[in-house]
Length: 362
Image (tube, rainbow, N blue to C red; front, side):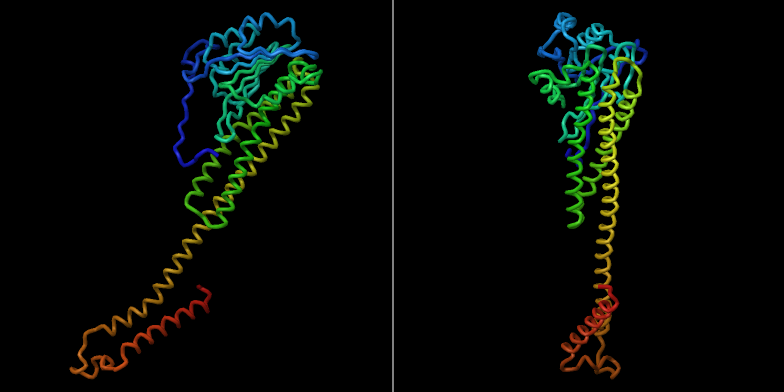
């Protein structure tokens, strides 16, 4: 999991200036270089063009039933703007593409839909990025902040020999497959968090340690971030299923329903893990308090045993002269006075120890 003991530095996203016209595209200074990958899809054939250009899109658009354009990196806003013009994408949706801090949502336009999601970029580091999906009757366009995505299984299915469901269906089914891959990618970080929770629980049962509370609060922050992504993701999937636009077919909605079930399952896992962490935090506090009470009880008992011994030593340590008066501690002249005093004090200590055991205070 991510190191929770160190301070977290969040990169500030660059936003559109106040008062700028709607649809203004401004690149984030930290955005990665833009790279296009064009995938051309037909029931009986398949072609992939790496480092594609706008001219490749125009040259192949009419010859293929479905095309998937994957844009990795959002630095080149001019190319992104040309893509929007080539496919007639709505300017407000294009603005949301480059402002990569959008809440997961879905918007419907006349001939296409826009879906903004949060995608797992690194399950180990718990790093996420925005993935924007446009799809219409014959095209699917994805915009991601950097290279690296969970779409490799989809690419392998597309490249498989012979006709298959992914190549023979419309663009909305390809969009479903990509969205489903994004949703399923959340199982990996949630499983990692679950493993961390189990390790923390086992360590806590062996004995609470100082660093465990910090680790649990870090895990709780990660789960809160996941919850903030998964709830609007569920709403976006539900909106896709409820819509009546013709470019989302009834057959695809059946598969989107399965993806919605996955999202609900993820939310349930996150809620369960948050409840488990809450219980572990309370148990850690209880164990720490109980340990503190045990220490205080032991110190109290030790102090209680030594109180009468200290009193006896103080009495016998007074400098009285037995020659001056028979009342001035004549036992100071006893031949076995010192060992007798030690035995007497040991007897007092043993008696107190037995009394505490009898009262079950030890």
